[in-house]
Length: 213
Ligand code: GDP
Image 1: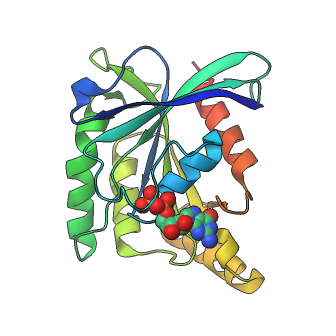
Image 2 (image 1 turned 135 degrees about the vertical axis):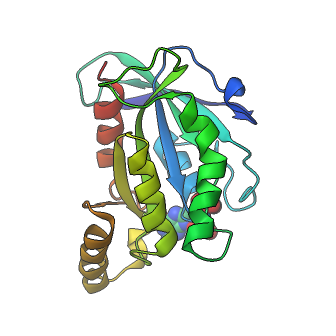
């Protein structure tokens, strides 16, 4: 698998600003500072997404279009939008955070094709999956649990990704991944945008989700 081209397309302020050209979307969601921008940069292998400095500035979604050759699903060129949604978790307390996520992300998810089973005739674009990023150092935070529940209610496919795994010792890693699975209802894919661990697996996941009709 090879990234052929990656570009920043737009910073949408409302759902109408989101491109609907048949290319599937993969949405990235997580608490602010979870490492979302760093993961995007690591996936596309160029510093397209600003890190830290831009925290909290995203209005609805920053869209990156990536063209890839090969990978899971066989040979050939394919494209995907990585949709970087604003980080939640500024507000204190779990329930505030999920209201915040609903507020910022609902407009994006509203126009999305929620499930493969029930194609909505009004959907403008297909969200092939949601990457829910959580910090591997803090498993099971209330805002993350509430966000997971909220995302599940949208009917979209959610994948759990544990970031900054390089920061943990071997023992902490096993403990935290276990706790994450218990509290968030599924095993997390551990990744390190810094060291590179798990990024090939993450691309495989993205390909599997995006390359299905
Ligand atoms: P965002 O707000 O979710 O976009 O988070 P950023 O991508 O800006 O990252 C927040 C901070 O975490 C920055 O200081 C990054 O350098 C750091 N960071 C992100 N990913 C990793 C990682 O995989 N390993 C380590 N050690 N630090 C990371």
